Amino acid sequence: MRYYRRMKKAKPSPVGLSKLELVTIHEVAEMLGFTHRTIRKWVKARCFPQPMRFGRSLRWKRTVIEAWVAEQERASARARA
Image (spheres, rainbow, N blue to C red):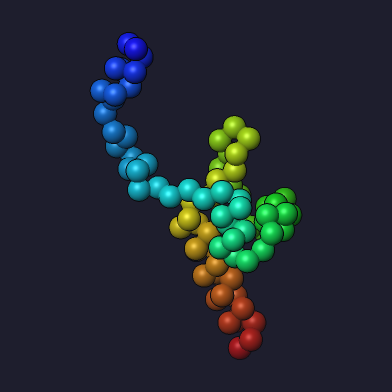
């Protein structure tokens, strides 16, 4: 019970982690319309943003994925021009 009381009184993090939205590999795959296996292959080939690791879990910042998609769109537009 003492541990719980100490944790409850802790101050919020100054870096604004509450605003940080992290997504899983399955959420990334759903966002992009690919399978999670394809995302893993791209990560291994370094064709996709590298995830953050939390133990065995992989997470990406949603903003990083959105920026990557925007860059892919720009590259595609340049290739067509």
